[in-house]
Length: 379
Image (cartoon, rainbow, N blue to C red; front, side):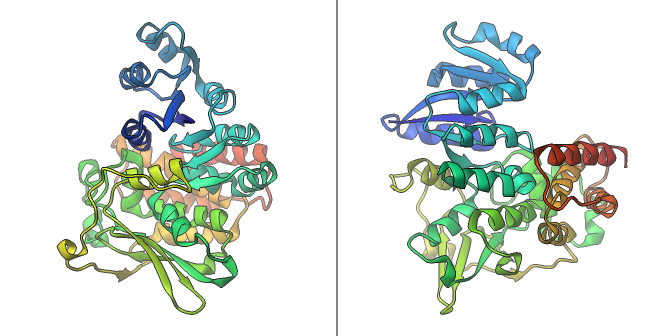
């Protein structure tokens, strides 16, 4: 029985992680669950999976959920609660599925405690990749990717030597507006943006998919996960999301990972690695699909992806500023404060002002994150 803690259990990745647990009740025990503000769902999860510890976003939410939980469940809240659940349980593995840079401290705490990491929080490696990968190596802790693209590359590299890799290619669906012109983007609404054609995801990541920020974060994450220079990381538009990513080797051979778009597949692979277990996901029939399509990435059409590559190459606090500006801009768009195209305008304006710190420690990263959010909120 593998004991797991799920941070972000009420979000899209968290709920699908628990779906996988339910499929294999003889394989997993849930040690702890951390949610944000959805205390109704979190209480239902606690009743079903019977964790020893639960954490919520704030002390007020903790007071609201307490009557809904069994008396023997230890209750925590805030960032301290995330750290407590990440480090101080009997879990073998911590799935970090919280949204945003809030996942950094808890991931570092889990690494220090020697927990295996199921990584679904892009911002952890985007904002502090050098710190996280260094500590993971020092502690001998594997970082098992849950994002479908990174899971695909991880699977394609099994048994291969990194020196034989020519480059990796992350595929991108293009999001809700992939077929719209720049002019048409001026009129799109929040409701339009949230209609992703292929995947069922949370609001923030769905908007990030439409701006291509999500793919930019994945590029930076891939740099740290696989130790590749940015010149060896490519992005290709693939509307069907059948090929999740692929690796080209020095001899021009290409190894790709294919499947129907369902996040439970990469989640289960991370939970069961190196084993593969039966999945209820519908098998892929290439005959039914008939044809799949690809387009070169247009960096003029998707400037946020260009900015992500630039920030990744600069390094230091530039990726932190990119991520923080985007988080604030997306939140403002979802609240109806700004139009869609202002997301990228805010990011670009923040980066023009940013004074980079080349090798930041954790306090410098946090200061950059805080300052950037303040600037982005005022623009």
